[in-house]
Image (cartoon, rainbow, N blue to C red; front, side, top):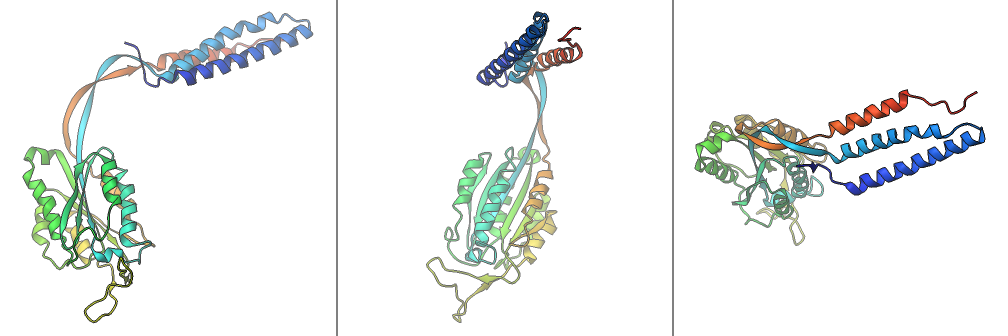
Length: 324
């Protein structure tokens, strides 16, 4: 059965019509010149069918005709990427413009777009942790969730990183061994690194045993900035002094080092998200399965070859318009 890869018949028809008009203009001009010089102009038109066939061949090639099917092997490669985003109050600090969380939000939107064939999930953490979006191939849904990130989504409290990491580990251990073997898992932690104060060693060792790599994005600067309140004013400590939040990278470096991941910084002077994206892209998942699928054979080469041959013949064979 004949099918078309690009069935834009209107555009190709318009192209063919314009070509006919131009060729008609050329033939009429040559006929007038030959008649004025007393030459036989009729012989100038023998190239017209040649050029019409060449144009038809180019038009068919553009439409992409295909018939027949062939069996092609397809590899299904699996990769899961968990995005763990810190939404604690300190992520409202403005040492990264417009704020740490808003800048991270914009960069994650771009990162998600780079992995259309992989599953991505979103976990928010602060004083607590919650799965905001389970692993999905639906990029648009994930982007919607990323667009709703606010520091008010979770109750205030000491930031916990162990809880979201344990969530990822729990999902890995609950899934079947065959499923784990078929998919590579990566975790991207986006945080300013403040208030962890937890023993992450057991969780990191367990993640490393599953082959999961943790990539960390440190958002903020060493100089830091004060934390604005949603209703105005600044967050203050017990002595009523404004709190200055600074990037604390020690724990984030530990995450990457112990799992074979990578640590990058994100602020107004450094943007390591592009390097992190490249590292994730190079993280190849194992082959889940190899199967054969029926693929229609595109036969555009035949009309294209015919058109090129006719055009070459048109260029080689010349016509003497005026005879002595």
